[in-house]
Image 1 (tube, rainbow, N blue to C red):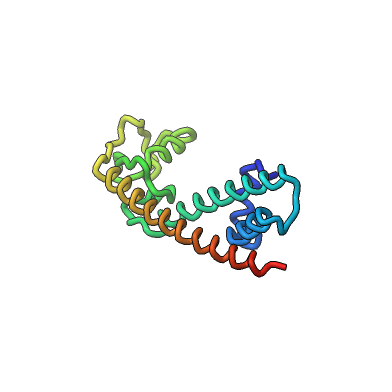
Image 2: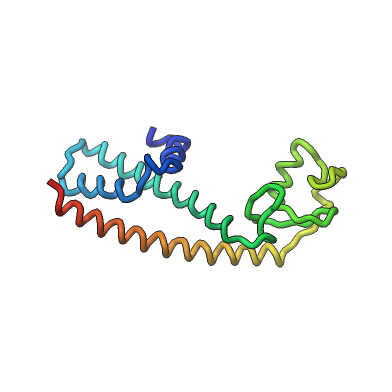
Length: 165
């Protein structure tokens, strides 16, 4: 199960199942031979822990982007932070990737239901650039915060191991 992406996602979505601190403490205990498990299992658990950490960060980052994003950076119809904003003939702005998904079933303006083609949309390079800069700044903040958190977790795990009996 540790290889299954759906399983990993479910683990990190449930706060009763995933706390990075606990996973790091277990790894430290294994490394200090306070918990004895076969070598392969130890490596598998470490790999699983790393996959969980990455998935948790991805989920947290998505929430961070959405929570802090200005309204004009968010596709209001599809509720996603836009990567490639385009203006529809109706004057509304949507993400091009979301519009393409919409077109699979219904080649219309999603606001007015008037027939349209992808060629009818207008690129918005200035807005696209602003969104990219916003994401870059948020990503940098996020990585700094996650590194700080990791250092705190590792320090706590070391203290716990010293007192482990």
